Length: 268
Ligand SMILES: [Zn+2]
Image (cartoon, rainbow, N blue to C red; front, side, top):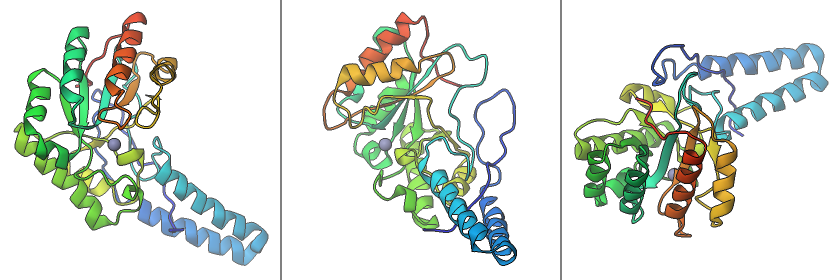
């Protein structure tokens, strides 16, 4: 296992929820300090103390990589600030054949959403990116090629390319740079936050999800998400999944949002 440890990067309190990372390399001195502490504990107190400490520090590192809401390597927004009245719908993995039906659906409900787009897919269908913006929605960076099996393990050069290539692609099509980033599969690692800082991107997680990228049962997805709907919630949705039911799922979520007297709004 890669040796790492770290600490939640500080999040400043303020009006805007948009906070790009400020200290993306903080994990390195904390990692070194933690492993030095393990060695010292092992030396003075023996393996019965040193070994569990070593394993715990590595388990913490793995949690930081795999847990979508983990702030071990840098900040992530998982809820809108206190006092937020609406919910933020985020739709990942487009553009796709679902994009236009989704835009019609959102219009019919008077709802706004942010589409986290894959750069290569946006380059193939730039007219869909422009249509998203024309209808008053937002776009975010969701990597250039969506390497979902290996995103968590990407080294610094490839990670930077994934993030900055998507940023360039979307900026070129939209005429403005995205300010939000959604990690692929929600994973993180020590190399995500430096390119985010350099591009002025803030990482967005979620507080409600229904596993709609893999789950084909519309009712099950909608009721999982509905259980976590509340003012300030960030809802994770997808488009273009193999099961072909994403539009029906978003329709179900919009109906629940309306039934609960909530509104789907953008954070900025
Ligand atoms: Zn994705």
